[in-house]
Image (cartoon, rainbow, N blue to C red; front, side, top):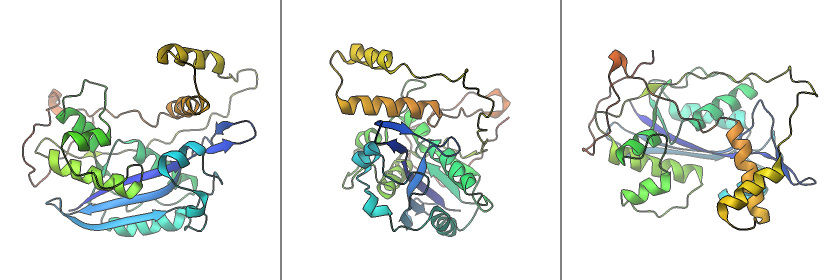
Length: 279
């Protein structure tokens, strides 16, 4: 049994003429980079995977995505297609009994959305996964509903930060370090069940609603107590649209036998796994 710690970078559509973000509801976040670290049962790195993906749904790189990830169209225009990279990624995973590890379950949801968009098979993908962010948040005693960020977790563990963030391979690497340092007998894999989001085909023109951007921006002006810059408005617009996709909703883990969730204590890593079932 091995751990596959992975991360993605995503792209969205951007209407330059109207300066607005847009997305295809079948696949609002297109994967443009896959990075992964393979760990043995003792959390030693035994292999790496890294590949850009040629954009097909959104032909240009969204300005915010480019600014955050430093991915340019020149870096991905000649990259392999998603179908090709996904095939190689499954070979890298190699065994469906391996455990998928990810910083937040949102990346898993978007992986399946991208797979379904191209009608590709999911056979061979591991079903068990560990949401490292969730256990790290418990480890650092974050209030319920408040998840710790990857960079903050790395800093609080006083781990070396010699790689840039917002790169799929680098973020997978940092996630693997966090997992190794917080792992104990209470960190258990859960079973991931993807529920496809059905496009809303019944919406009529009369029922279609528009976002009141004036009020939205005014509210943020009050919160920030200053005028908004052009970049502020773009980030708020993108964050609003990302929130509507439910990409960052956390999955609750339910214990069997009505037991309450155990805290992830600060003990040394141990080998072996317990398996958690959903009711």
